[in-house]
Length: 290
Image 1: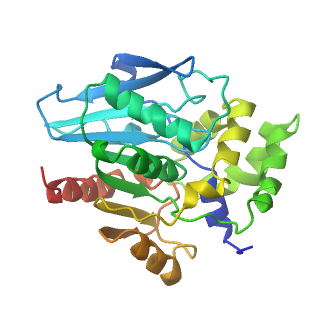
Image 2: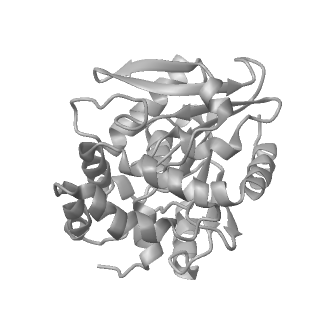
């Protein structure tokens, strides 16, 4: 078993944020999958008006509102903000949650929104989700943006991750998750208001969603060494887990990888430095072929 830093372990279990007025006013769309409604927002340029279509994917125990500071989209861009199954406004299907199910949900949103190709942005555990979309539906993916997420598991043995699942299964799981995961992870956030809203959102996640979505990333099949061939941008909060050995591994897996470090930010770097996030996203979009 590798011995990851506290921040790296906490990076496995993150996502969420708060709703922005723009998002609140936007019409919510839905598509049916596995007997449950998947809800998403469709904002910005109308279909056919832009090649810069970006799909934002949250991670563990969060929802689309983590991207509130990226709204509204700049002129000419179209943004799709997805609530993964069991998260936010999306319904919890009877099927066990998995990375494969999440990836199919993203593809269902693309189909429902009449989008042929898009750039996929995944925060934290949204990283394996967008990677799975690229693996299963390569024609749909123009590029990937990894936001402080990992391309390899934190445990050599998936059973070691069960120690992190145990608190989520307890009757007082909200208190245990807050003390063991959330509060240490959220402490470095710049804004007290953002911190409070993220915490509230994450702790409102259904217990089954917490457990199953965490177990989903313990599956070794999620972390195959199959190369990622599309252009990929990694926006990372500088921390010990993303050391030179990890960067070398990431570059060996992703030949077309661009890497950008963010200093003085929390795991929720898009909330702490939205201007820097937008600057890097805009440059990446401009670099992509049509």
